[in-house]
Image 1 (cartoon, helix red, strand yellow):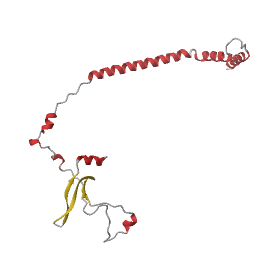
Image 2 (spheres, one colour):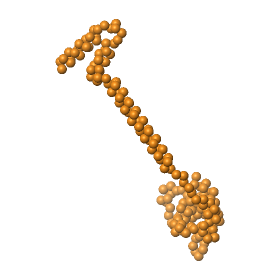
Image 3 (cartoon, helix red, strand yellow):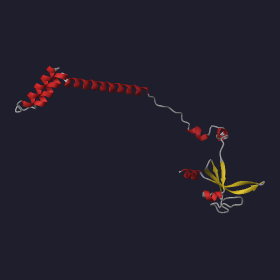
Image 4 (tube, one colour):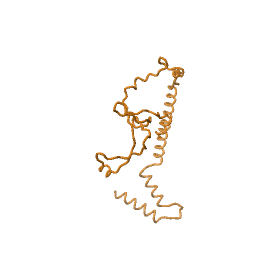
Length: 181
């Protein structure tokens, strides 16, 4: 090892004390000599690595292109039967739609007489005989909700000592769509 150190010391001494008029940087020359001794042509190795990487990339691109061409040959145009006439005429007897499959779905139907907002303090002060003022006026129609969506309006009636609602207005599909937004 001392030979290597001596050699390195001589190179550094020559580089620092040598002629600077030759037009080249002695430090760069020494570093280049050291790199050449250590790597033995690292530029060529780097160029080989780049060439190999580019070749791999080109092979992958060619492979992907061939795969895309193969997949394009496997694709087919879908053909659908024209069912416009059948949909217009109705396939059931007498044009009646077959909706039996939805008849057993349970729905939550509620009628609303009115609403109000109370503070917790006001709610706690309520007792038997207390009156709660609602936001609707007397004679205004009740609102009928199905699963929380307004579907109709009506008036309260009493039938056999039970309350009921006589429907006076069914909400149009357009109004129902407006309520969704």
